[in-house]
Image (cartoon, rainbow, N blue to C red; front, side, top):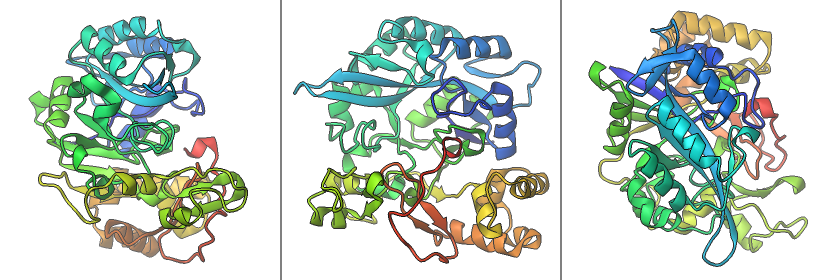
Length: 418
């Protein structure tokens, strides 16, 4: 049985996240997207964990809403930020994803982590004076079934290998506890071919997750696994990830991520790594330091040429969220009634968003809308154009190559579009 999983999302209790991120809405959205396993997000927030505990039922580490046995299965998930001083005395901030094998274990995790910060302040809490290694060691002592992996590995300030992280490898970031780290999340601004250029990452499983801040963004990145009925539990899920037994990862075009290129948002400056190098990585308008993007950082650490593919690498497929594609071909807003109605009709006809993006016949899609069929075909064939994002500005899709590119002029998207 094929199972699509999105393990990194957020709840209504996380800063800059939609109030519509309730368990009921997440369940309904997962089903229309075709997602079988979804993270709860933010279990470290006490009020959210209480809602989870009161609303869920299940065993073996996967839960459904009470009375909805046919609904999406939830796995206890959260993201935390550790703030600490490295060996040189510089303050570092690294984000980590945590999966817990049960509600009871999640409660123990919260009890322990509350020593390092106010868990009720944010669904993505800040933990003070605890290193990545310290976090993993403490969690593993609570329960060896807890699964920790670096969130959005390349994000400039908060990714374990981001340009400003201070680390050049997962081993450096997690020190002696790297032995308990088996996977990493690529983030929206990189894709597998970029990560395959770093041989030191070969031993880890590459994971993709949406990091959704609103319902429509759930599933924009995901993993696909083959799981037999007896394997559809927490242990089976984690075991598949550890064993690199993924069928496929679903990927954002990395250019659409908001940290792909180097840049300076305040000045409207967006640069390739080569262009940034000509300016000494300083903004040509104001002279301040550029935000070094993911492509630049990958290039700096790469020990393989572009196009390298390690043995046993999991296949991937690029995708652009369906509402974005509909909005593009109809030249209407993603949030317009027209796009919402068109989306609902497509889901009713083809079953789920993932079916439409990855599997459904282009001919059948074209029967509904010729331009939509053409757009989805170009996306599947990796021929869609995207004007790269930079310094917090999301990239702009231009599937039919209609826009005269003016890099640096992209408008920052609103919180609800994250």
